[in-house]
Length: 326
Image (cartoon, rainbow, N blue to C red; front, side, top):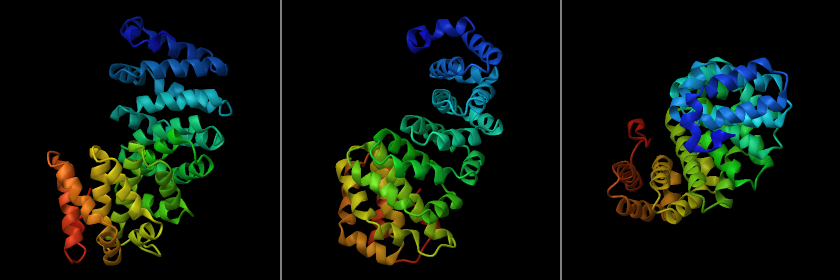
């Protein structure tokens, strides 16, 4: 437990702590308590970038996954394993290694088996969030039913803010320019409504609002890709009450470049639908975007997104896929 003290990390790693932990895990695979504590130690060590690389190089990813596979019913092993993988997946090369070693299936199995444990589930979502930054792994998570698993937990734990924040962050990452993700979220009964419910219940949480605005932006952008869906993404989003929630987020988080950027991006993509654009204008979207322009004049990304959104709101045009907000 010395690894919890950041001042001791350098000394611990110098004494081959990583190798000692992994050797112990290999020798005592059947002991769940030991495996849980070892995963926790690796998680603490993985708070330092160089340790993330060293843990992976010494076979730590495979060993964590082996512990999780061997003790699937043990919540502590699963939680600590997911937490360690979450930290390790900060490193881009480790994302590929986790995926190649079967990590996606093991993480989703842990989340499905221990659905009642909101803390464990949040840690699993954190791992998926980082893993989804690797496009092939993102596709694998979607094919393995990752969105279904995440939405099932959001249904069960409607008041767990930390878990909801991580769930929405993972969903935003999974929907990043991936048609399968958009269609899955749309077709899953109540999926979009669950995201909006989390948004409505936690208006002051910057991280959650940012992620939810990002989800709405990505979904609305799907209308420009001619996907085979029964109703346009923008229409469904608007019908479920997303517009006022996005505008509230922009108003409450004026100093947050993340919320301002994603909120303006959502408005921009929604405005390609003529009927939805009318709704946006009637509910004050133009004024909200103008306020974002003024507030974020020094931030080139937010300013550019807001400028594009304002242009889409004030110009009658045909859909132009090259003008879609990021």
